Amino acid sequence: MSEREESVIERLRVLFGHYYCPDCYQWKCTAKCGRRHQKELHEISEVIGNNQFKYAHKLLAKLALDIGENEPEVTRIRTLLAFLEGDD
Image (cartoon, rainbow, N blue to C red; front, side, top):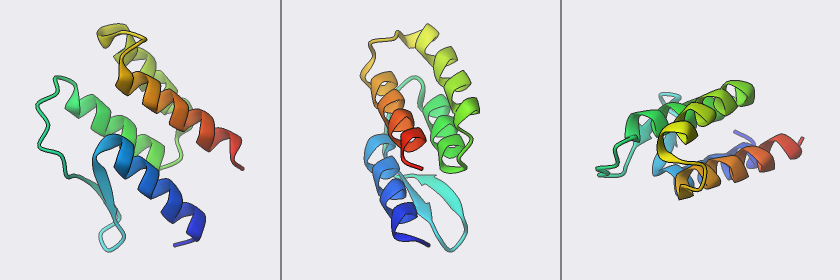
């Protein structure tokens, strides 16, 4: 795994409460979170981890309609996507 990939994975872990297991190549939730939209947030983090940014934007738009554009989770994901898409 490259240094850039490790950096991106660490950012995702901090932002979403997930970690990437390089042994099984899967995202696993580490947070004991009672948030209503944990499933959707998990799906978005997996999609971002697979570099499917357009699909992540679609999922995020759907989530934002439900919980609101100004929700901190929506802002964090938008910021992360902007960073990743601009860092080629």
